[in-house]
Image (cartoon, rainbow, N blue to C red; front, side, top):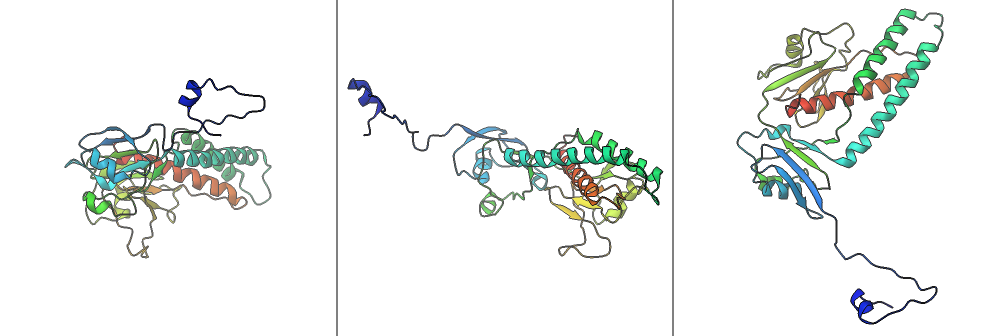
Length: 283
């Protein structure tokens, strides 16, 4: 039988042995769901949202963008994505630590260069130390539009989830160069200049640079491999305001491809985190 709690209170209802009582949740009763919008919107802050609410809805409630908004560099993060990225990152770190210990303890085989092996072990140790400071932030690449009516029909107008965060930075007219260059640096954007120009601004490539694996992290979070000689996805690696150029370390691991994969994965996630912070002016 079904009864309301009021009926139970008013009718001296008594339970008998083996009765089962189920108290149902009020339909559409949810805990407060909140997202945070900071930066160049008219009314930054924490907003309570309803199930199914879209990103454009909350941007409108926040008064829209200011005239100083650099929407191309918007940083959108999601808690569930962060947890997934953190697990993958942590797994790669654990695997790489084991690989480094094994590599250091393994006798040098015939034909191997002991000095090269120790250089690799030292490079891994430095990478592991740096990696502790650059955990994933759960970034989701997103393309906003200052015309919010137009943005409402965009595939990037995502359905919001609890603890989502959106940062709208102010205008960023710089390019950052990270990795295996002589002077990691942030320089002023110059229209029409290519990747090699900015790398030279950072002192050029180190001997340890993997010049075949250079990539660009665009201000919106998208990543693109740089290839000076071919067209990629219909464009020749165009540099835009707020972009970050990443020059990875050359990894010479002929006998263990997994080490190379783990190093590449960690380096990439570190670069995404650093690039994101540069874009929003956090570092």
